[in-house]
Image (cartoon, rainbow, N blue to C red; front, side):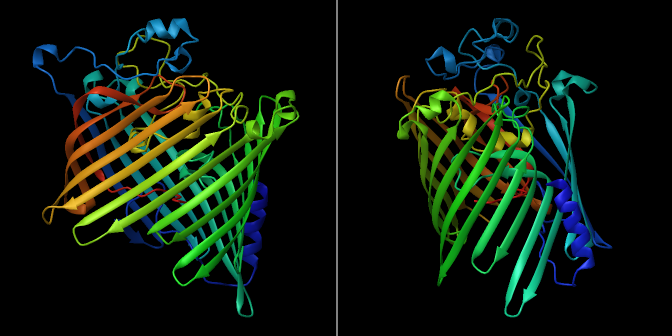
Length: 467
C-alpha cells in the first residue's frame, strides 16, 4: 500500500492541475500557527495534575479503586512476579504521573509542498513527573509522529473524482461505526476514493499487537458506502470487509452499517458484523456466537450559553467474536518496583488520559464469553462569564457478560473551565478518574474517593476525527 501511494504521488504530480482539498489541522494541533512559505507551525504546553482530598497526615495513604470481582479481569493476574513488584495484590491505585506534576510540550509543523500534497509532523515531549527528579531519563519521553497527505480532484464534465491518500499517524481513529477499532491511535496507510455519492476506503494498519493489547498483527480494512442527501439529512449505507493477522492465523469480518446524521448536530448509527475463519470453533459455532452489533446515538446541542455533547451506545459481542483477541504482553511500566516507573516498552501518552474509557480491548477482556454492554458519554458546558464555564463530564458503562459477573461503573469530572489567552484552557475541579498503567492497554482507574483535578492545555483537535 505504501508503494501504491508513492506511485500515486508521482502520477498526480504529472497529471492535470486541480485545486487541492486538504486538512488544516493535524494530530493534536491547534489553530494558532505561524505561516511562512506554505509552512505552518505551533508550539504548546500542557499539564495534568491530581491531588488527594485527605488530611496531610494521610496524604501518602493509597487510594482505593473499584475493580471487577472476577480475577481474570484484574491486574496482571497471570504474572505473579509483576503483581508482586507493582503491588497489585490489593484494591488500591498504583503510582502514576498525574500525582507528580507531569507536563508535555507539543511541537507541530506542516509543510504544504503543493496544493494537493502536504507533510505533517509532530514531536510530543513528556516529563512524567517533576517529583521523580528533573534529570530522571526514565521519566522523559519523546513521541514522534508524522503523516503525508495527498488530496486531488479530477473533473469529468459536471462530476468529479476525489482521490485521497494518507501515510503515517492517525489520532483517535475509528472503523465504520465504532464496533471494533475506535478511540485508537494507529500508524497506517489509507486510500480514499469518492465519486458522486459513492465512497471507497481502504486502510492498512500496522501491528496492533505491539501497542494496545489486541492480539492482532496487521489489519486490512476495506469499506464501500453510499451517502444520500435530503435537505440537511444524510443517509449512509455501507458494507465493509476486514482481514486480521492473528498469530500466523487469519480471520475476517464482514460488516454492514447504517447511519443517519446531520453534519455535527446528531448521528444515529448501527453496525452488524460477522466474524469467520478456518478455526474449528468458528466453523462449528452458531450464528449468534460469531456476530457482533452496535446501536448508537450522538447529539451536539449548542445555544448561546450552553453546549452539550451526548453519546449513547449499546453493544453485543457473540461468544466467539472476541476469542483469542486478548494479549497481556504489552506493558506500560518496566518490570521493576512501582515508584517512578511510568514508562515501559510502551508509552501511555499523557494526552491519552483525556480520552473516553471505551475501546475494543475492554470487551476483549471477556475472552470467549458473550456479552452485552451499554455506555453513556456526556459533556456539558455552561457559560458563566466571558472567560469562565461550568463543565460536567460523565462517562458511564455497564457490561453484562453471559457467564461472568455484571460490572457497572462511572467516571465523572466537574469543575470550572477558564479561557486564557492564546487559546489555552485551565480546568479546576474534582474527578474520580485515574491513570491506569497496570493493564495491557491504556485505560483508567475508578477512584472510590474524589481527587482534585487541574488541567492546563490548548484546546486540542483530533488528527482524524471520523465520527
